Length: 277
Length: 321
Image (cartoon, rainbow over all chains, first blue to last red; front, top):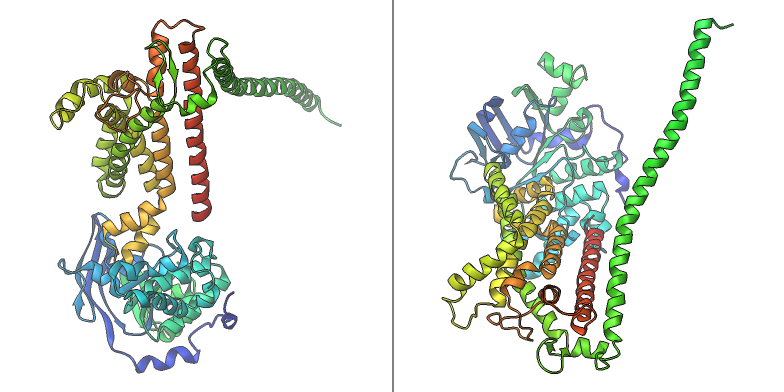
């Protein structure tokens, strides 16, 4: 069953105490981007992005479809490597490690950077095997503590109580929201520092969305989270800082409450108030 | 009050509707009748074939001048010599073992090669390479099986097998099995590739995002997820191999013997039937009728395989969807 605590009504802006306050406490930078441009073949989709993302905070990427926010997200774990013709120039650093270096070990990078996709994509395997997939891949467990690692990951993604009696049954029997939390558990199990979420609630019903948002707020204590979302309310509910993209350019970035209440740019204001997008 | 023009238009359209409704009814009815008739034709064909098989098989087991032939002696007898010797022996086991030996060799060759080719085409090859290789495979699928038969006889056996070991005869199970394997390769390959390509890209992305390499993604996600289709491809190909006739009639030999030695010649069930129907066995004779019993046995084997395949597929589907 879903969590009883997630009957949250949408906060129009970040007046909730859990968001604004800790920002000043943890403001060390996790990700630095300088002059980042990206292309798919000859089509430039990102133009000279400069953006810093603070550690152990939630940063939301917002903007209309095709503004490049998902592309940017996919450069943070080099998922764009799987797309022929994708390339990028400039600099991205994750805790000082340059991500666009051609000598970078992407396998190691993706161990440090987990990703959750638009549609839940559990493997057609058991719940246990889904969570254990990453640890087994990287052999980062001793045989005895794999079960413990799976349990911890499922607890961290608030799924343990719902699935602890059926770990060996197929993950495809779970509801959409449970599948998405399973995918979060699967990403957590390899011990990442950064979690990327590409519109993680776009395929979910409102109740499941609420439980995922609740989870994102909890995970912020442990992980740096970057979330791409189309949903303004969601961005304002879950994120500490927000970056607004338009036509491949970073228009404005700042603390979420500031960006949503007193944006500096006219286009930002038009977008967050729903005048276009 | 309606105007003349409007009334006329209404009448015309009404008459037109009546006529077209009647015509429509007749047309639809005859279409349906034709379709039912054609469907019944295929059902009827199946029924007639099975009826003939059963009738002639019963005839074989109840021949008055051959009281020694029984279901028991047929299925447990280890010697099949219907044409030689004073007293014909009808133990079908050598024919079954010959068939299974050739099929096993074909499967051992075609299943791994076909699956790995499918993996290459689906996961590794560029679109251009894939389209070239697929058209080559289509050519392979279009080669008449008699060509594979003399390919086995004039190339595989003398140039590949006999240099390896002098124990290979001109006719042997190995050469025929490899040729049958080459024949079923396109089936394994294209059906497996279909199964692998239907695995959603999102699963591959999920695995890559966890730090999987291309090999990890293929071996731990794509193949397991597409396994039901791969198993179906294997079963269909093996069923095709069991029923293959021309290659084994040409290259496997004509001596029915109970052996698992691939360098020996064997006779398969299909090859025996060819031998009988091309020879001058009298139509009511015991050899002639024995081929129906063999055909019925072959039919049972392929039927059981198809059925098993359907059950396996269903079980996988329940698990994965």
